[in-house]
Image (cartoon, rainbow, N blue to C red; front, side, top):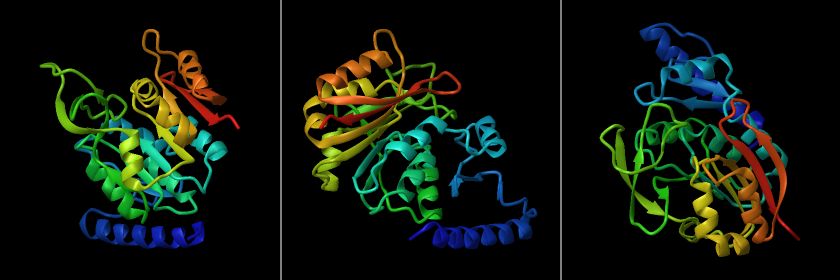
Length: 264
């Protein structure tokens, strides 16, 4: 369905939200239907204020298109609508839903998010926008069946970690890109989208052969840590036959968005 149909659906959803809000506390506008929702790039995104930092929510409300700007630009330029997508690090679904709008077959997308606190928001975002992606509530990790990860209200600070008395942690099941693709029956020409705060290097290290044979495009946020840098990331993928076609720094300096395509 095109954007015109989607706009009608979103208008209907917003109307119901406003009616409900008016009955309780007053409708406060389309740009911010309720304190836990925002219109971002033509999608209605749910943000549970119990688990998403309030500053993050208000920043989105003030500048709804600022978050993941570089990743969105990469998707606009390099996503193939006919290729299946595996997205790792879906968060609350802002990029997930944006990608899904651009696929010829929306069901050919798997979005992975291990944080049990963010999953309800991701599920509601998917439902609000009638998105077609499948949610996998696991973490991509290797050599283990379960993973410990830190969780904070800032969705940009959740990562695989060691058990600690100083941060809240949760234990989630582990999976791999190969397993996700097999379960989804993705046979090849996969677009892999990653925003997993450093674990992108583990994916390349542990799944080199699978990436080489089954993935055609990689769009990734690359985080610098010690010897792991954008240049080393590009070098590793170059050994697998990928060519770097785009590189852009996050406007806040947190990471570099890189795009790679399989050399013909």
